[in-house]
Length: 147
Image: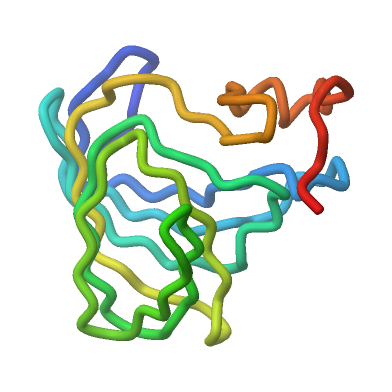
């Protein structure tokens, strides 16, 4: 088991419970991530997604990604529409592609492959793109919420 240090871009079999704000100010478990392998150029992870996205806005990611759903089902909302994905579904997205997930089963397992980090991630709001930390800290007073 490797231990990641700040700035360390390499990892092998690293486990992490990812907590994110639920827009009520609470840090709650969002997914369990097992990084099978990470280099500066790409990473291979297993994700056990534990809950639906509760954000009022679609979000993007800091890397381009490929996902193979291994177990479960969810609904993915994108600007182009809504689609249900089940075990066996394959998705490839750019870092700037916004989406939101709603679980249709108690949890979902995916094989998740990413490029190296390319950018910060954030939310696509009616006022434009907003860094995730700005929303996580509740500094969104100037933004209009979706109807």
